Length: 127
Ligand code: HEM
Image (tube, rainbow, N blue to C red; front, side, top):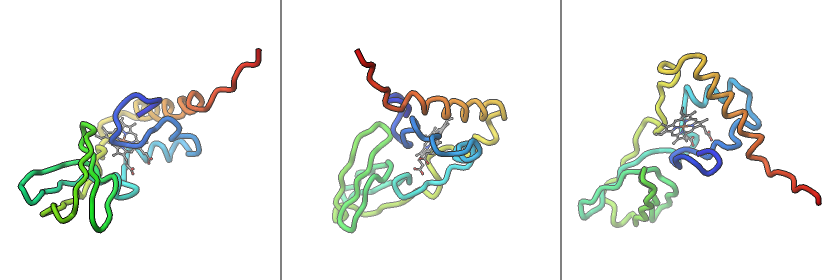
């Protein structure tokens, strides 16, 4: 998501490039590694047979909160969950380094750097 537009599977990228070098931004695109459990996809099978797939947004000993790709939240009690399986690979495609040209990657990095300015709060004009 950038400036409120886009999807919400990944983090908001409006100010992502702010404190990073170009190569660090490029690495985040070509070699995505879930930074924490939030970014992991999981499939929960409830005791009544219902299945929920989504990103784990929060989890404790008693409950798990998942968000499906369409944005729906599922708040499940662990006592109602038969099985909770985590996807081993990150949700973000891992092959951008292969399917995008060097120029396209440069453009993406340049874009993420360029939007940082717009995301900063604009000073109010004095009358
Ligand atoms: C060219 C397209 C894309 C670009 C430029 C891009 C860029 C990025 C960047 C820079 C991050 C790192 C954010 C951070 O560490 O806070 C990120 C993370 C992520 N992206 Fe993408 N992404 C793209 C496509 C996708 C797609 C298609 C998906 C899912 C279907 C996706 C899902 C995610 C997720 C879940 C994360 C979070 C990983 C984490 O929190 O550690 N991305 N993306």
